[in-house]
Length: 498
Ligand code: BES
Ligand code: MN
Ligand code: ZN
Image 1 (tube, rainbow, N blue to C red):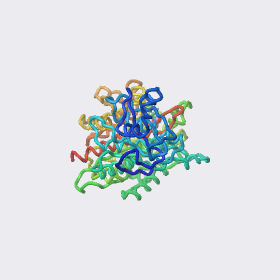
Image 2 (image 1 turned 180 degrees about the vertical axis):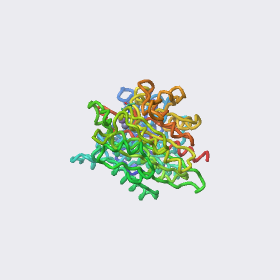
Image 3 (image 1 turned 90 degrees about the horizontal axis):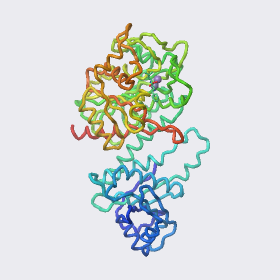
Image 4 (image 1 turned 45 degrees about the horizontal axis):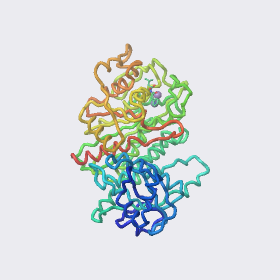
């Protein structure tokens, strides 16, 4: 993690390895750029006139030697059209800056970016975003690489400059919050990126205990025997084909009053999904190590809110298992009895997420929750419907769906609502059990949600299908940490309306 400081002062007087100042298109300078320009014999104006810097968003120009100021270098960063500058652009700009600083092996920098005005945003929001995005860009996975010397060259210190001394304490709090959310997000990414042979259900349970100890949460882990006692027949059926024991992980953050009903987050923690007997094609099957990203985002969010000491009661539940083919595995046609007592005909063993989730959702009833949000890489159909930009939202309470959509909009971790009408639910009819675990080829993301809806009738519930948003494929393959930002924003908003 980078060390962050906040300071107020004039750019030309700062002794720093690198000042980072913003310029916009149409030769417009930020306040800090104007001062540097004045102190360097109009150097920035000259570069603009020559077309060496256009101000295009994310463009970076490093001036390695500058006279007239105290700092060693200046990094000019383009922020696009001034009138269109936004939080999204601030994120992009921060990413560009961090990448440039890393590539130039600069270990310390002074950022004059928080001073840039954005309609509808305050200084705290801008600083939080800078810190979150800097940490996001600085994350790099090396847990399973033997050559990790890149680590030593990482950026070590960032000083964030603010225009007004009176907001110093607000700014310091924003750094704390930004770091807390980033830590949760990067925890989710790290767990997601770890391979299935390391990140097993037991491993996830151990990590949950580690964060519980560090951040004063209560942790409980149920093993298969304990789950049998609770009659979690659906969850256990998925794990039968695996040599790794399934775990039900429960974390409790008690930040609110003991009378307050908790919000429960449930995350799918399928540490490797081969499909079971309904085996998946081998193409890109490695990516099914990411099938625990919902669970990882719940653990990450719990970590973030505990670190922020959010005054709210929140419980995180992660049902965790593998889904593998084996002589003992579920077979198509098998009928299992869930904890709720309802029977399920398993027509496709690859629709296992809903089987582990339904028992966790029934388990959530005991907490008398004010709301339950489940998060799951549940369906390929959701990737087809919404792609990589929006997570799918499904809910039995439209106002809850709207809260999540709003939180996604605010945190730029966006989500979009889909219907769970009765007509879709009909597709789950089975000739032999109370329901089938699949609803046919049409509207697969919706019928999966309809399945879960049958287990969540006693409380306000929403489901986030993150199959398209939890990780990137191709050359940028890796977990994104989504939707930790959305969930943190949602929970912080809940504190305000309480
Ligand atoms: N984990 C997968 C969903 C998934 C697939 C996420 C591809 C991201 C990319 C889930 O367990 C699954 O296999 N779902 C099936 C359901 C089907 C059998 C009804 C799917 O989406 O194909
Ligand atoms: Mn599956
Ligand atoms: Zn799965």
